[in-house]
Image (cartoon, rainbow, N blue to C red; front, top):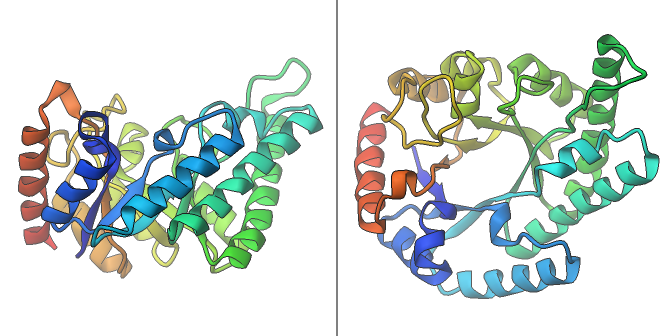
Length: 279
C-alpha cells in the first residue's frame, strides 16, 4: 500500500513549500490539495493560485494525486429551485476539473448536491429531485472529466443525506457508467453515520478511486489521525485489500488539538508504520 496526505495537515503552520518538503522527506509522495488552498470568490484569483501552486510543486518529488473541489454553500446552490443559481453553481464546479488538469492532478474530489427543507415539497419529492439532480450532474461531469483526462470522485458525505451511504454512491456510479467517475471513501464520514467503513469499502469495490483516511469517536467528524478514534483499522486495511484498491491511501486529518508541526510529523510516521504493517 502507498500512502500520502492532504497537505492541510501541515500547511496552515508551515506554508506551502515547507509542507511539500516535509511530505517529500516522509516519503508521503501522493498529496491532496485542499479547497482551502485556493478558496476565493474571484475565479481569476483561483486561476492565479493554481498556476502558482503548480509551479512550486514541480520542484518536489511528489505526485499531486487528488484535488478537493469547492464545497459548502455550493452543495445547496446545486439543488436550488432557482435554475439560475443551480446553473451558476454547476459552472463553478466544472471549473475545478480544469484546475485539476492544470495542477496535474489525477482525481477531483467533489461533494454531492444537498437538499434544503422545502415549503412546497414533501420529503419524498425532495429526495426524488435530489437524486435526479445528482445523476444529471455526475453524467455531465463525466464528459468534461474525460475531455481533461481527470477522474471525478464523489465523496460519501458526513451529513445523513443522499450520498452518505454506499448504496447512494453505487446508484450514481451505475447512472454515470463512466471510467471518469468514481468514489472517494471517507472513513470518518462512514463512521459518524454508523456505517462500518470496512463493510462500505467492500460494497464499493471496483469504484474506489480516492480516499480520505481519518478517525473519530463515532459521533463527531473530528478528523483525527487513524488510531485516535474507534475505527477498526485492521478491518479497513483488510477491506481495501479485498476490494483490490491499488491507489494511494490519503490522510485527511488536521493539525489536531493545536499540535506542533513536529508532533504532527511524528504522528504521520507512527500511523504510516502501523498501517503498512496491517497492509
